[in-house]
Length: 362
Image (cartoon, rainbow, N blue to C red; front, top):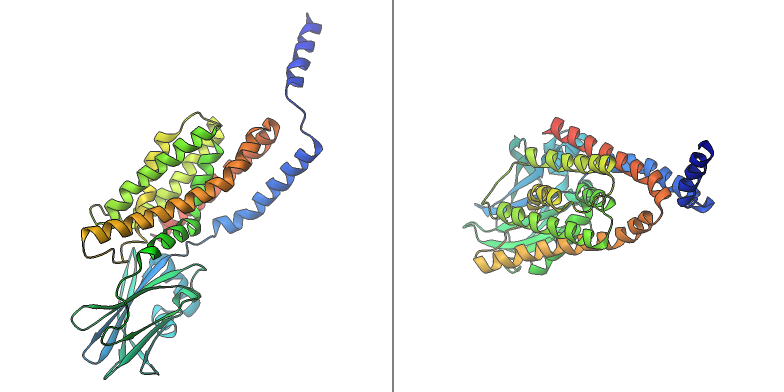
């Protein structure tokens, strides 16, 4: 009887193919790479979006610089005060002359900081607004610059980044006023690719699925959910403060990581994905609120659709890169046994760090 039991045990063990030496080395190398990547993941900062609103009135250019709370902290860490940061990074050139700025009102709130600068712009025929904010803050940061006339009409609107740092406008309004519709598509792609928390959430979701059709269901649920809250929030139908949304996004990463660790692979997780997709949609909407979606329903719908389409293009590109790797991992049970728990622990750690960071900083 004992001999039969030993034989059965040996047979069951031999049913699982032995992991080849290459597989073992790969497991060690991938695990080491993931461990070394923890600091980069945990300390990654969302490149963010700031706004620079310029109003020409009474011979002056009145500039309002609006920064998210995290960006304002980075600015203070680098320059000492928000006043010093603003005066050194925002420039107004009037008819070829760089004018000095005087700092004015300064308003700080849990969601962000706004500071007002005033420049002499008397008898200005040509105005250049130049900003070093995107280059100074996190890599990939973008800044929407809007120039308005004395009666509030838009003279220019442009999205700046580290490579495009200025906008020129004649006081008569020679610059096209609107942000091109195609720019919203590009903005959506860049927003998802620079949103480390969204990407980690997506990776954690894919790590727990088995089949390609499960991937389709997971991505579809996430798309539908975040599209609903993205539209509702961008159109000001529903407003949820970033102090609530950002910790919840981080918490969603932790929950998915724990589920991967406890349950392993699952047949379907679209309900969980849909629920957290609603939360992530509010995070996407933060990049749209100050962009000026349009003056009529058609313009708003087109720009919103373009941004959402850009998010989906970026998301599907990431899925296309991730899924072959995860499918190969699923095809090697022993390799998955070694790597999946380690990946889940890293996901939980990064999400937990972000959650505590956002709770303490909110």
